[in-house]
Length: 483
Image (cartoon, rainbow, N blue to C red):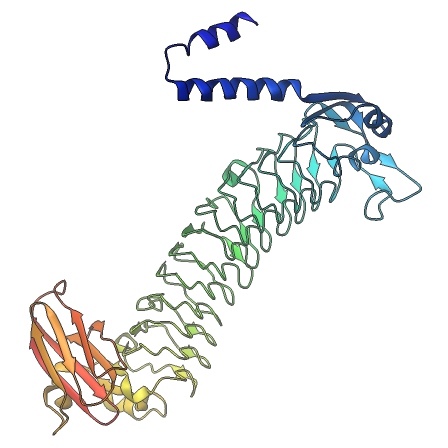
């Protein structure tokens, strides 16, 4: 036994039996790994004959030079868990007969496409002289961790696609580009140092399906492809200034909660579609494109249109927002822009003054316009009321001055009460709309609908005069209350 090993054994004499057992197992495991490694020095085209003479152990170390003929033999090796190619050089080869996927030409210092597809290795140490990792090289493999060496400038399409055990990827500073879906469908991936590389463009589906990836810095990125982060675990995303996005760039990010973006951001069609957990978009884009935030059920759209000039088709469809504020520049609202916004109770258009925006006849499809309050600038009720679409809404300037809001509909049976910080409503039939406003007509909160009774805590609201509005299929009641 070597002196260091003897000292190690001596050091555990005073420990408890369990710790002693664990320590011994660790030492013997490390020794076993060292002993079980097979090292082969190879020349191009000779690996087949060398493997016939030397059955590799759990760790296989290749040194010397090899080409595509040799590398093609590795994927199907049984019993090899760790493949160490760190000291291997990959040479070029041109053959008369196709070797891999119909190819006959292979470049030096390139890891060939799909060379380790579905391979059993949990760890691969890549050649230090490598300059490119071609398409699908490790797709579907058992790889758990990989470090791409300095000198590599390109990673191809689908390189690590479907590596279900892959937890960590270390990228080199020399990396310039990655291919489509290069890191997609890696559900265990937790860490990747993208910001350390020189990558400036994320192609389509770059990190799609990486559900364990909860954060990613992309502040050095110039462009984002379609569904680059779809079904990933990213919860917050900070977009860099000037970034260009393809249609549906951030779509299907079902774990995204917060999106921060610069004020001059230009969103493409479907940019945030199906981001079902998204609650906050911290910017006010100048244009809201088609399908922009469709099916973003939790998104607060109350201030999203502050600087917008237009709202595209299905832009906010199925949002759960109770209030929408139209900024002074909104001039056009397209087909079904606010389709099926069943919780929408209030639209503030007062900033538009007499500049009534063009609006599609079915912009609010699925919602009864007569149940939605529309706030306009003072003395403009008649102007907006004469419009064929906006005239369908419940137009007001100061909600406290609306006659109907201060009086009970005769015999409605609707009851409103406040007790111990709770607002309670009861009605003889199902409540179709219920909301609480401040005296200036700003929506404070929306109450549950569909039942004959509703209640909500108001303890966190500021004190003062407020208005409760309640509607059923046949009646309406507006009540002033003191909070």
